[in-house]
Image (tube, rainbow, N blue to C red):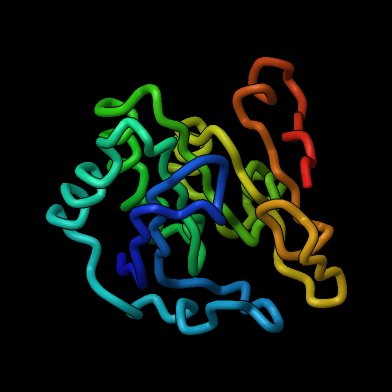
Length: 175
């Protein structure tokens, strides 16, 4: 897996101050994507053990609320297979921090057998997340007033509440 960027004090991609990892590779190719360079799976730098150690260090300050994964597309199978072991390490080191992921795929696509990008680690990947921002960016539904989203079709799914309730629960839409 490759990544395009790491931000160490991001306040735009989740609640609180976050460390953000922009992974490379995306097959969605949304019209007017804000980062089309990340569609290329080889864009940026290789994600290595050193990268993981650096991210874990960045997460250590108490003012960091958590980690956010964006792209590109974290849920491309090749990315999932690299991210799951890393997220296990994040959870072990920082159980108090939350993990968000953005995906152009919907929750339903991620949980329906036989659909791309579902693979052997998708369920575990989802289990390691607290919040999933799902859905492709749709230019015709663009709305700059939305919190943490670019278009009205995208949802802020509270995965912890959803697991507890047995159905999808959403974060409040505080603008």
